[in-house]
Length: 243
Image (cartoon, rainbow, N blue to C red; front, side, top):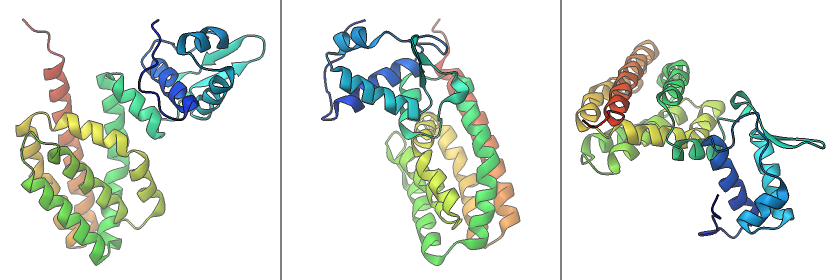
């Protein structure tokens, strides 16, 4: 494998963790496999053993690897990976994840966000409603084909989680921001599907504005189901084999 020594950050061990983490989630090193020893990796990447060991500590903390005495460092099963870690999520998206990955994300959202919408309808403040209003208006005003499309969508959902006034919900939004951004970027790739999603977002927004938790939950559930179907369609279109 060729050495990847360009564009290194000031923190060498962070760069090494990124390089190895990307290889792990990208399938270069598979779960259960032992990765090359320190000497081989150090020589390939041109880094010290100290930098490697610090990188291994980072990857261990993220659940990606484990060290086994006298055997080496092995990639842990995928179920042990910390999928709520922003860096792990970023590495996953950079490796062109399959449809199952996206569907798992949406299944998780369908469990959490309808209840978050209900909480927001009950507990939102006027300032939080203003933030949600601005986010929805930005969605309506976003020019198709620009970054404003997915960025405004992201801001809407983050503002909603913040409006729950539940510190765990708000923290979750920050944690999975990378996942949401990438899924919104993909789902907005087809203009018609983004436009079709606006009424659903408005229905959620209006239920929160009117402080109706039951309707807010129902509308968010409907929005997410429709969004999942739209994403499935987008992925199918992107994966079509050219004739």
